[in-house]
Length: 76
Image (cartoon, rainbow, N blue to C red; front, side, top):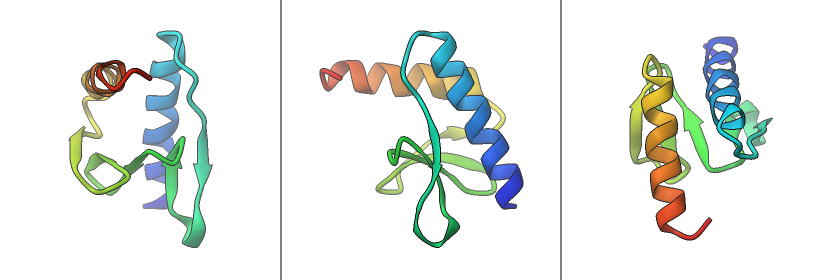
């Protein structure tokens, strides 16, 4: 699962970078994979760090759209 999770996060990171956003994938405590310590992935869903779902791992472009929309609204 960890290798698959990391691959999904890498794909999301690439999608965001191609859109001009800074995105890096890192490993947190306990081997938990995260994207900029804000986005995590489980076996099926990308989630915000606090646990709320963003979208399925299979919908990377749509998830990137949602992330960008929310972060732009927050002034990031």
